[in-house]
Figure (tube, rainbow, N blue to C red):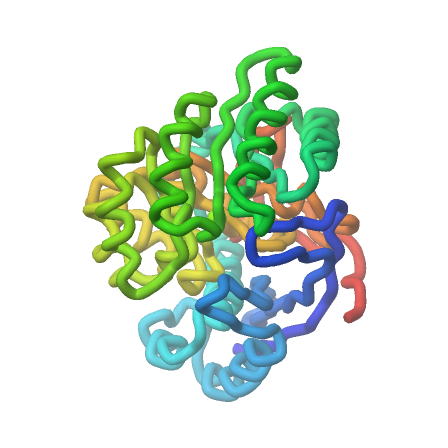
Length: 356
Ligand SMILES: [Mg+2]
């Protein structure tokens, strides 16, 4: 096989602010593998969750070193390719894994969800994300989402550097705004590790009283963060979900006794192959599954969407907040996202890639 990757830039429609800072534009990599007249596509790029950081340039350099080693093999020879992929960083592995899987599905003429026997009718509503900001900015973002997708689940970012009082104001403003909407809307909170244990213990029951249904990553990620979750859980009446804390199977096994769910992401775990494994192990450990994204286009979210039938809390909204998504093929009816029916990842390049 022949492989290559091309950098491209994407701009958010609305900049997203979380506890660690704000992002407006992101550099991404389109990964391609070619063999036998079929091209498999993958996407990867910069990831920074505070304690794990990978730049697009470093990921591109890893892939440039990989391509000559993969040349003797066909994309379906996973077992032979596996030792070459094993040393890669999770985002580098993600890019090539997606391209190999896309090639495989295309070579068989089937979408991946069908090859894995998954039921596409089981895809539930995705949450849409409202970042940190002023009370008025949060109200305005909620109204934009209402116009765009009529969401039934909102993920509100907390862990504001302005403190817990500001966090509480944002929750109250959100609840007041949603009371004016038709139908019921679930509110879940993602603090992105912005609280310490005492703050999380104070906030969890208060959030429950406000009608919030889920609490994600209240505590900072750390090698011993399972101790914090063990202490927090008896005081937390909401389902507790970890995101930044859980990158590997070892993290999953360490945290599983102390939380209720895990937010899976292809860039964190190294692509579809490993994320599917993580999902199945998490199910066996009794955890509920969320499936999330970073600043990803509909190519990476279209890949993640292949797993949506397994997911309790879909969280794949990043492509809906892009100024120019270069890809098409990911299906959406209001706030329900489904994987495409075309072979492989089901995603095509719709327009030329914006240059970095
Ligand atoms: Mg999160």
